Length: 472
View 1 (cartoon, rainbow, N blue to C red):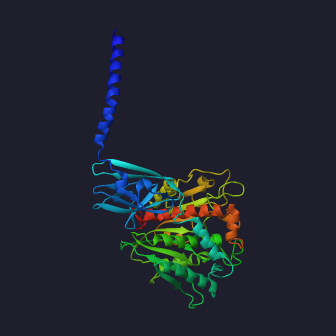
View 2 (spheres, rainbow, N blue to C red; view 1 turned 30 degrees about the vertical axis):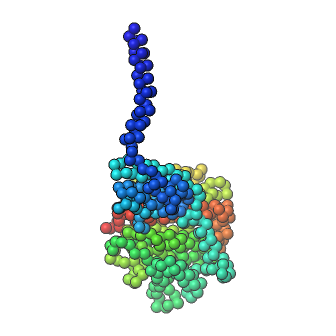
View 3 (cartoon, rainbow, N blue to C red; view 1 turned 180 degrees about the vertical axis):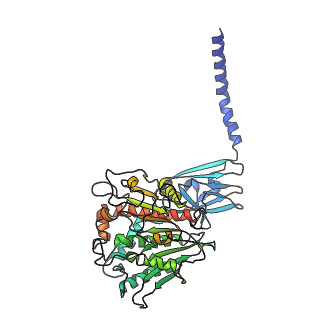
């Protein structure tokens, strides 16, 4: 008898729930009556949000209209800028009755979730898939500039800036340096052709650097990115030197040219130098001259040097693969690595976030075997790791100059030594790079990945106060 009454009670309760359900939906709508009409408050590139087209790797102008509203987005999917400054939290409030936000997607973003928050905490979500775009920093643009620089005969379509050996007299190096200087100067940077002569002979410069300066809003700090533009001398080890130096290091040189085009409209926290070094192949003499001399273009000694990002030997790296099907190694090493057992510098967290969360790289991908050369402190743990992203004391490039001055540093490079047989040889050409990675498209993809990694690292590091000189 009691079981029968329980069954009836449950049936009555079920009926009541079914009757109340439609009413509860109405009540639910009343509780959320501050949910906004997304098309009425949000436009993308001048179109109502739901009608707009989002393209990967490109800028988009977002206008949010409505007092008390706020726009947010997942920080690992998009970058939001206001008046040229990145909003590091990706959460922008309306100041007054409207706010204009510049949104940058990466080439690796597939969809975007934009959230409009009302003053009472209610939110309206706009989800949108992306179509393929033309990235603001692209492998295709890199290849076109590489082809222009490394071709053989000067013409309207060919710069032919090869033979950039540091030594004198070498009019080819002087001609190339003037071309690179003109690139930065034409973009509006405060640009200097920095010549340091300590041989008392102007025809034998100790270094000849191109330095482009961008002023930051803080008067107390400085930071930078750089790449060496000189190439291995003929007859030099281990492969006999090179005339084109496509991989080492025209590749990095061109990346700096593309960064300059992007950063010209971005506001930065600290005074920032974009540099092309000379004499890297002769002992880092160019970057050392910049960092340790007193001149108009030199590193200011009265400001805190926060960080430096170095680009050297790029593109023969993941996602490109070798002929045997295994991926080329990819290196992003941070420093200084004071204690190999612990993380020493905050910039390591930036690098890890960029690769792991923003670029969604396969951080645990390993090969069956080992790579041809090891890093200083962690080779046993990383000898078969494709994405070799960690703190390390590895040297052999211009980041060492700035690491020695207490800066937090990032060093990007791809395969080297045994993993790239054309290293420092006459075979180090753009044509050979294409052949080694199995085609131009593969090379462009590899360059695009590492260029975006370094660019994102710079943007995040610029707005991270915890990144300080280790001696500060």
